Length: 472
Image (cartoon, rainbow, N blue to C red):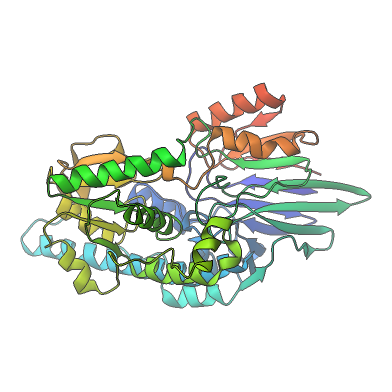
């Protein structure tokens, strides 16, 4: 029997996690952090709907925290098997997971200081002490379990079950996974898309087509919309920078340290070279982003032709004179005392943790400033509230008025849009018996399901949390 149970990223885009069972063995496909309201997220991330001791191995499509960030909690609660991922994903996880633990520790420290300060002045918030989900020791044990896997090199997960990775073009090292199970003279193949990237975008190769499979578990993040062309994106970015600089404001960009930051730096590099934006300073304020950029420089085998040409011409795609990378805490704090115009790019991408919260706290109240949202914002996150036009938000539990201009640029997303997903699925249509949509909010899943049915006549399902299917 080959069975799949959906335990994460069902009708939402965070906390990707699915349980694979074959011949009495259990494997976990993804172990991502769930992001949203603090208490709800804490509850989801701290409690697994299965026994971590019973998991034989974990497979990760890529290193983004919503796909890999809860691995240390799994290890903390008893998992001891191998964690399979591409070589670049292993390198990225080696930076991202320690950073995740550090950010949690710092956020908890800040929250606890605020709680004690309120208690001293007689304003007891009545909240229980907060602790990080995991610490650096948990991360170290997790990293020791990683097993790097090459693309297009099938490996045996257990007798009768093999897995093969294909380049998904979403992030450095991202992969779609194809499982093949054989038992009692029968066989079945199912694919897990992970997050599918976009064709013809900077830095990474295009998503690789998959071989024929019987079943497909497909992401649907942008299943209900279409992205604009790249030249439109560059022009929009140039306009945002130009008008904000003209009023003396700063542009604050919440961006994932992995992938999105490098994409933004690449685009800004091109705009600077073309003299299409004013000569404003640009800061990348994220120690993680600085280190991740070094990993990008080391894994040039993942580059597309255009980015490889940058390197061939001896030009660093992630470095230019107007750009400065910030790692020191004091320098980060000093940015909030600067007068504009300037650009600061900082994590996290959904405004849920890290240095970006401090930049937003100092910037949201000034109408001269712009907050540039560059990717999908999950429900209940601070980033989503800004996109939805909330006039007041809470940062570290304190109310902050929103007077800055809020601009969204979902076109910078590394997720394929509806049309791109349809094109990626097309080569598999002849053999597909069913498609299961995950990693998408209900409207996106419904829209993509309808298009897949209309275009290809496919049997499409949108699973609920805890729902199981048997492939064999």
